Image (tube, rainbow, N blue to C red; front, side, top):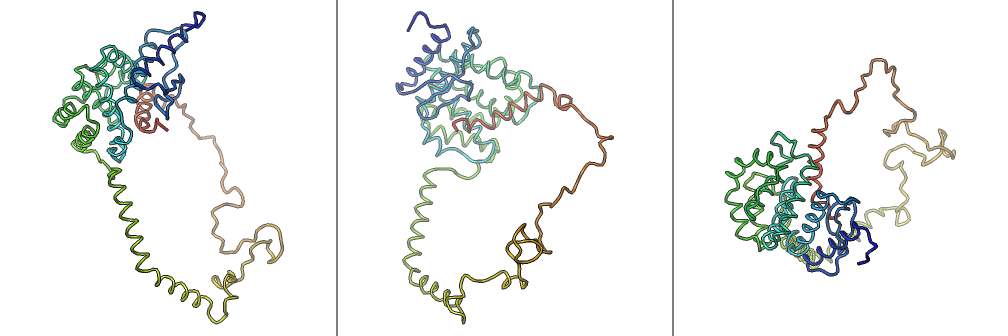
Length: 342
């Protein structure tokens, strides 16, 4: 490490080395950017630190880097894909609880990692504006369930920025999924069993699991389809050939084979319809339009404003205040969690 490097470069190198060490992966290439946090192949993306390295930025980058490293080490993508539920809300919950699992394993084994993760969560929730949310909404449910699982698995209370939304949901959720959270603690080191427990938790919340996305069942259905197709080919192969020959003869009719493929629009519509040209059949130029042409593309503009004298113009900021924008942004981010890998 050169002495003439900037503090930011020293920090980036130390963070990259720590990520590889925690993940136990020497092949990981760490990139610092403003892209969504995650891993693509052997490329890990973490936030770019500010040039002056403020304490909150350092804590956030370290925590999110540790979160990526723990997922690389303790997460099996194939098991995750087999257990992943369908629907709209269920996948978001499933992703959040799997992240809670890998982070809990790391926090249990490394105290410093647990502190980094807590700092990163605090900064993340403040960026999302969760500390300003005053109502219980569906958008905050996945994060609250994640925090409840985190508390059960590590004993850590929710970060200050999320304490208010946690209290809004906690009493209701504990009555619904208290037993499920205990089950998560029992199988935290077994991703497959943990995935089943998470699916049960989602079901107990009366959230639709969608179509079963189990890879095992998909493979089984594909094999069944292949066998059925093979049997159909063996049993009906000759009949299909005979039917095809008969159909060809029927289409040929009395006109013989030469008439096939030469049917004009007149045979179906009763009137000769030139394929191109102008108003006169056979005349090249603009396409000819039948009187019965039902195209919905207008030949000329069919509407223009008569007057805008009485129109009311409302600035966007009067329709949506900053707090509502923050809530909507948080809702959007949560709905896109399962797509970050793309």
